[in-house]
Structure formats: structure tokens, C-alpha cells
Image (tube, rainbow, N blue to C red; front, side, top):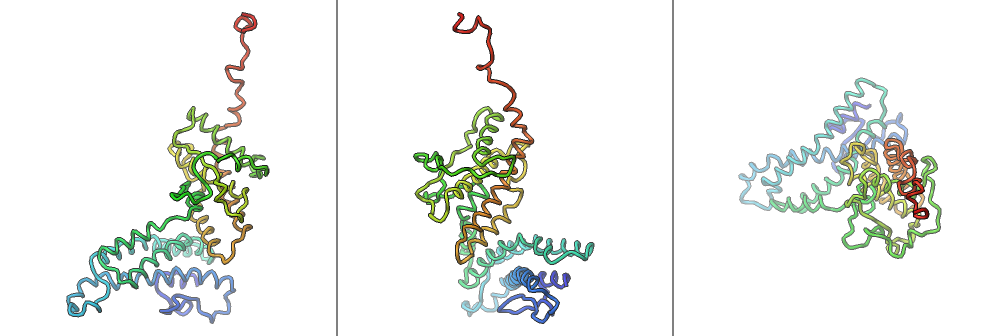
Length: 355
């Protein structure tokens, strides 16, 4: 069945995976050997296949459409979409689909080498397209429904590409504070009155050698001082804007969000160092973004699910920072080197009391 699935995802449905113009690609209901959980995963994959088929239909329909307009010049209202800009958009859309096609080819090779790989493996390999395809489909449907033409296509693509990353995802996954109107509960600069900083709640243990979030944040600053002899100008200070914090988000959760964003930004700003090569989130940005998107789609906000996800992101960041600063840079050992020069014993002749 795996080969039938890959064929369907490539745009060639059959008896197991059927195609309907209205509902798209779906798993046939007449398969008693499929468990409901497998059917759910397959239908999730079928959404990718449905989008892919509609993308390819759009490309095939409009790529050669320019030359057909000469036969319908007397009825411009029925000519449909056409033009060089539309052809350019279709070319770009086709290029965007190439990684998806390559992923299907790679999966085919993997299954030829190991026929015991499961549907979950296909779902894992194609998960990166679960956010991309729906977003691009919105652009395609907008062009089709509004009959957008010429340079208006450029404006449509620009508007959707600048749709904006939600502030929480931008801050936690990329260290970006996108808050021109000062509406987010994280701000640049020290805390006003130190309300958030002086909270009475105990810092939660990160599970990394008994280290708390506050202690690890202090180690971050010490590491920068040791490595660059001073705090770099690009390292900015951030704090919580207490008056903007929603009542359903506890201060402890907001502090975790603040810690993650500060850590990601520090790492991005100082990524020129060889010791800091790689991603602080271990290249899990897409997975965490998908989890945040899933929580956003829930009808009711769940603090438990939200905090669990925040904890997972924070633990990933904290583990990377611990490895970087404490294990690789041997920071704790450097702090034990010895007393500072001003505290070292001096000859009696140099002491003020004996001068």
C-alpha cells in the first residue's frame, strides 16, 4: 500500500486513494484492514496530495494559456487568467514543488531498500510541507477567485509573504521581537520597577545538573564576558511588560518565554563563533512552529498543553546552552581558576597599614 500512497501523493490516485474534485484525495472507506489511527494519518497525508494535485492542475492550466488568448479577444470576460506574470508565478510555484517531489523519490528509494518502513515514516518525512502547502494554496485560491492579473499578482504574493509571524513564535523560535505597537508582553529594556524580576516564585529546576533558569541566564552573561571581555553591543536586554501579560498566562510561564527568546537571540547574534555553529533549537523550529499552530487551532486555550510545549522548547534551549558553555567551554572550571588580582596576598611592605 505504501507504493499506492506515494503514487497518490504524486498526483496519481487509484482504488485505495480516490480523487474527488470537491473533497480532494481521500482513503477509500472499503478497507477493513486499516486501523482508524492509520486512516487518520493517511487522510492527513492525503491533504498534501490534494494540494499538490491542485497546484499541478493550476500550473498546467495557465502555463501555456498566453498563446490561447488570441482566439478569444472578442470575449475578454471569458478568457480567464492569463499573462506573463501568471506564467512567472506558475514557474515559481513549480520550483517550490520540487523539494516535495524529491522527498517522494527519496521515500520510494527508502522503501525499496527496506519494505518494513511504516506510514508514520512517510508522515514524518513530509511533515515539513504541512504548513507550507496550505499557505501557498491561499495565494493560489486568491488569484483564481479574484481573477488577479498582471502586476497585481506581485502585490498579492508580497502581501501573503509579509503576513507576519505571530509574536510568540517569532520571539521563541527566532529571537525576533516583532512589536512595533508595543503590544506584546516582552519588551526591550530593563523591567520597570523590577516587578517581574523580584517575583517571589522559585525558579524551576531545568534538570541540568540542578541548574535553574535564572542561574543559566547568569552563566550566559558570564560566558560572554569571559569570551569577549565585555558584553557585546549587539546583546540587548529584554524584560516583561507586566501590564500586557494576559491573566491566563502565569508569570512563571512568561519568564520561561522570556528566557527562551533571550537565549535564541544571543545565540543568533554571536553565531560567528565556531563553538556556536548550528541551531540552538537543534533544527526543530518547524516542529515547534507546527505545535504552536496546532494549539492556536484549538477551540479552547489549554494552559497545561501550552506550558508543556513552552517547557519542551526551553529544555531544548537550556540543554544546548549547558553543552556550549559548561561542557565545551568548561566555564565552571574557569570560575575556579583563583582569586582576582586585587584579592591576592601582597607583601607587607605594600600594604597600606605597614607603609
